[in-house]
Length: 258
Length: 334
Image (tube, rainbow over all chains, first blue to last red; front, side, top):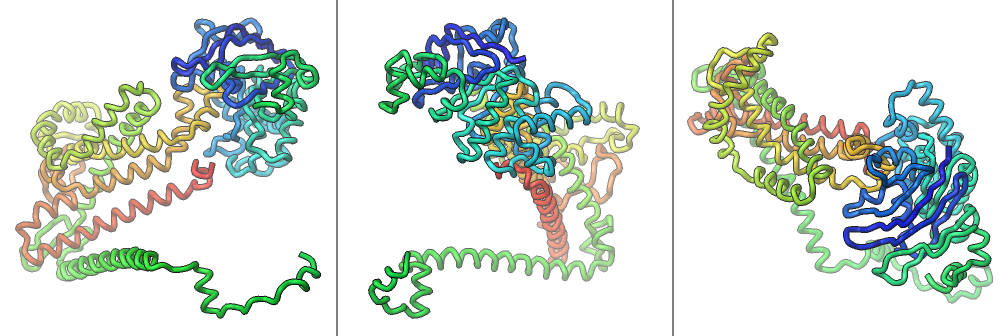
């Protein structure tokens, strides 16, 4: 069920400002692809074009093609709402619905998609929470508010919420940047398990993290502030961190700039 | 720190006295701090003293009046303070005040929430600014102007609505219409709804605008439509704010005086039908009778005012209880 993403000639704008320019890449199914690069280079913007969240921002606009297997997400007649049901997303700060219980948070996506029997919902909630390695910690307080969990647990709750609707692709926008090292490790282990079932794209500022969790790494950069961000190169993670083909990548990875 | 260091340490400086320690813990006090402390503390105490004085005075006058009341103050359908012995009661006023306010809330709250949602989540920005400004202006119109508009424009034009209600809902009894002038509880409720609409709209709009982007994006990323985002993120987050806004509006509706006095044909009966002219509210009754009342009559009106005060307190308490009941689920802790 995981799908391949094929991006070609993608530009994204904020109003008249061109934020990322001419990006083309392929993301393989059942793998983890990491986006790295300095702040402001457009990697989060690019991530948000993959589930049509970029256009939610006032003035946000996208040109180009994003193919999910053989379907162009930006084709005519494509409903962004339907796209987001296929391409799930986890954000930088854990954002469980504060007014909902742990259970309702996980079931929220399913309830949007139609009506389910209580027993069906119970099964999916348990399966998703187990999939997010959270079940043992919350099984006795499923009816307590999700905002009462710790930060790391909240982020895993958000992952459970995202995978409950069985998306084809899971996008993660710096999912560990608000978490402590132990919670970060828990999420990284989880990413390793989830890639068996989903296509995962993760934006991270932490290069060790990119090296640890990803199979492929894409390096983004921008020429100067005010210039659009560009994809410099994408390659196997091992290659990017040992012998990248572009000098700028090596400079960034070895900490000589950025 | 290890023991050798302590042994090598210089002899301790003399311990400051207890008083000095206490002062040091509070930090140095400067004249400006002391003056401001006195001013702010004094203002707080003054407020309490004034409140207590008003409450004491009103209660004293009210007790004077109620102790001479020959009727039951809570259940009598009459307001005769000029006769001897006096007979008066607040039953009709309490009924009228509560019923007209309920009508106003039933009409105004859904409309206000809908307008606020439209302004924050649907209207293009170029449009929402001017609309919000016009609504602000509505809040600034004096209530007597609403009253005049109600009496001159609203009342003559309500016959159509009243006839329709009578035709389709007359069998319920509460929408039964005998064809009198539209100067009834429903008219008052409609007028009050228009008057409290701006405040509820404005406060709700502020609340909806403050819904964190990340909560809305959480719903969007799950594949929620715009309405589902509102239902999952915006309304739950704004719930307590909308209740507070409604209470502000309700407070105004309960206490509204001139507009009610202008559109209502008051009498001292409880009418089963909301369309029958007649009835009254606390504030309207005080305004209509105060200028011609005797000393004793004024005391009686003050007593009725105290009851209104108690009702307002109860309503506010209830609203707080509703908000507090689901506090752990409120958006504030996220």
